[in-house]
Image (cartoon, rainbow, N blue to C red; front, side, top):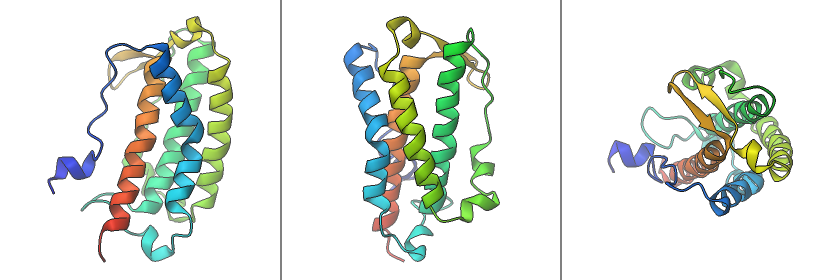
Length: 175
């Protein structure tokens, strides 16, 4: 299998040409149910399985779960910033370096708990947003562009599914 397919088993993120209410609602449902979907995939995995990588030089299942908590915490904060400030500049972070920090060696329960709590609050926030709020944005300095919240929810719905596919990949790899 080629490296591109291993890195992007669902393909690279493609923002829908039309960000319809239906697409945003579908992405919100993905965010809402993501912690349950993750638990279904990682429930009862032993330490040996948690150390499997989804591709050569990729992250372990354990690192992927911790990365999801890190990433989705940042996404939630970006939403809150965009809802309370005018096109705020967000702080990018070096996710590969975060994935190598000491806390990436912990068991997964803490990150699963974070994801459960963040996604509950994030979903409640989104369900109560107005159309004007969905059009608010934050500025991403590495991408040199403003990103509307309705585009961001689509990205993070894909992001969760993308990493679930990585975990499935890692589970299929023979040791």
